[in-house]
Length: 94
Image: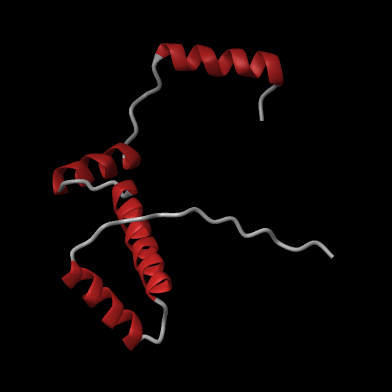
């Protein structure tokens, strides 16, 4: 039976004594180790930061322009028409 290999990396950090005490108290209140508490909190914050960084935010005007482009697309440029024609020649039309 194959055992799953759990890989880990070490992170060391120096922090003020009051922050350490605060983290330790919070961990104890949740019945967790300090390491588990810090790792979980850091992971959650990292995921939130990455998620927020990947969200595209548009102004009201940007939203209007996007909706307009979707609802009323412009005519294809000649180069795009040629590319579609060439694709049809090579692969047949669908």
